[in-house]
Image (cartoon, rainbow, N blue to C red; front, side, top):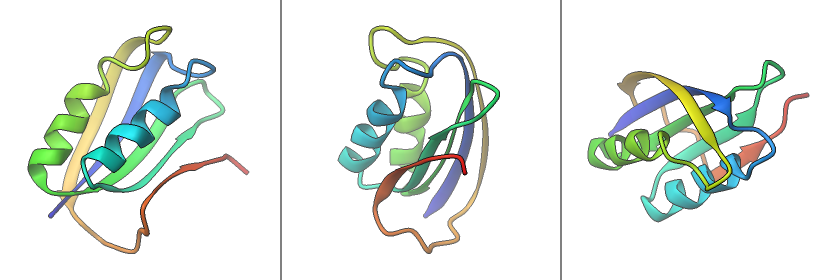
Length: 92
C-alpha cells in the first residue's frame, strides 16, 4: 500500500476537478481527500495500491472537459492510514 500526494496547477478550480478526482479515487478503491487551495491549485492525498495510485496520477493530467492542467507535482510514500473513504475537503 502506498500514498500519493499531488498538487495540480492550471485551470482546475470551478470546473468540477475535485469531483472528477473523487469519482476516480472511489472507482480505484482509494482513500484520502482532495481540496481547492487559495492559490488556485488543487491538492490531494490518496492511499491504496500502487497500481491504483499510478492510474490516478495519470488521470490527473486529464480532468473534466473544461479543465486545462498545466502541471502535476507528485510525491510518493508509504500509506499512513486513517482515512475513511475519499472526500472533498474545503479550506478553512
